Image (cartoon, rainbow, N blue to C red):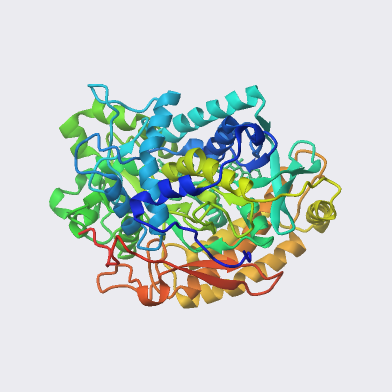
Length: 640
Ligand SMILES: Cc1cc2nc3c(=O)[nH]c(=O)nc-3n(C[C@H](O)[C@H](O)[C@H](O)COP(=O)(O)OP(=O)(O)OC[C@H]3O[C@@H](n4cnc5c(N)ncnc54)[C@H](O)[C@@H]3O)c2cc1C
């Protein structure tokens, strides 16, 4: 196959049978032969840890890499609210088909039906797997696992462990990984940052990593490479992501030939603690689960500065309940975020900056009692109180939308393989299943489906059907990539300019938020396409990276990540500019309905935009994967 033929490889046949049929048709590797193969897994978050442990359990020789000091510190640990699964324990009308339908519709019809159906099918197995691992999901009085609701669904299908679901799931995956490490199937490389991928004879055969403690640069070679390296929301500088989250692994792979899918699809989460100062470097999420019981409102009158308790019911605007009566406070994230922005733009926002809306628990506390609310959300309330010094049991929380998740990522086919054969991409790092807007509690589901259930099958098929020559570290391509990595590192250190890496990152973030954030328009995007290359030039002329390469040097780590964000940000703006429609998280102000909702153009834009890198300072080339909707018919999304 030519690397640029965009073939999704979604199997033919009825949607509910595609995955089963595909699994049967894929080739297997004989158990005795598996240990002859080495798979390099970069990332040990939910996707990477699940993938590495499962591949090792199958018998493959696995090397797993992460930049933290322990796989247990991957950003997945921060996930709060829950994980979706179509178990229908509540008998409230849920089914695999409904989860599939909600996800395709929630993604504003910009995801592949075949992938989404498989995800919904596997959701059921994920819960079984995690329960068997001992993940302490919340339970009902009678012992069944408890569920709550998340945005974009009218059923309760979200499994949770208080507001610490990611932590508990990651501990499960981490235990599975540790077991394999102890058994010798996985060799773990913490504090190792992948800085490039090695492609030999058109196939991914290795990676080049830098040891973040000693600075040593070395290559690892194998038969297949897996990237489970998370999302790139930190391109905006301020986001709910962990500070270390970055795009380097996927961006380096992109520059070696992996197409980048839908880079402009960013999720802005409606319920985050508002920015409080110019010097803030991180934003904090307040889980969507809070909208099960919290009611979102602002004063009806502009500039009403009275404390919330003094504003009577009749003078409040519960704008989500008003605009979306069927889904109310559980309208999907893109819609709820835009509605919050709209009331703030009208001058009805609350808090010191006017960029905030209330999330009020008074009704729920009156109805259910404070202890019930404490039991459901205790740790989230405590976190809010520590950050804002306000007690959310007494005063409504103040929240505002913030960057949270990236639906874009490396383009992959149904087998989770990128356009570089042998390079598989899992979890948030790929573009796969969420279309233009991800529904709450579906990222954990996708990362674990990819890692535990899909990748182990599809990688076996790749290995069994591919003849791979032996490669060794003296191969000229390996030497070349190593030299390029060393040269780039030396370049950062040699500039000795006047500005810190963070100052460039903050400036990029401001451009991205203003021009390519919650709302975008052609003029702003065109401006960003001038500003970003200019900022990039300044960076390479004036950045100051102190210290040396042969030591722990966090400024050097950040410089590499910001240099990549400075290129990726431009691609995001280019993608947002070319997509002359609004869909999900991509809201182009020129394309909206009279009521201010996203206006899609299915005739011209029902495709995945996959961008090819064509060389330094060259325009990227656009490839299109048309999307077909056989089961969920294209319609204007409505949550009224
Ligand atoms: C605050 C918050 C709360 C959330 N809550 C929920 C929720 O309730 N439900 C839900 O479904 N989703 C939630 N999400 C989204 C979800 O947490 C993430 O999408 C998901 O955890 C990503 O998992 P991952 O395995 O793909 O990546 P990550 O967990 O980000 O892991 C990435 C891994 O890659 C490694 N890595 C990255 N780059 C390199 C490199 N260059 N070299 C070596 N290693 C590298 C890292 O060390 C890490 O091990 C939340 C997100 C946030 C920010």
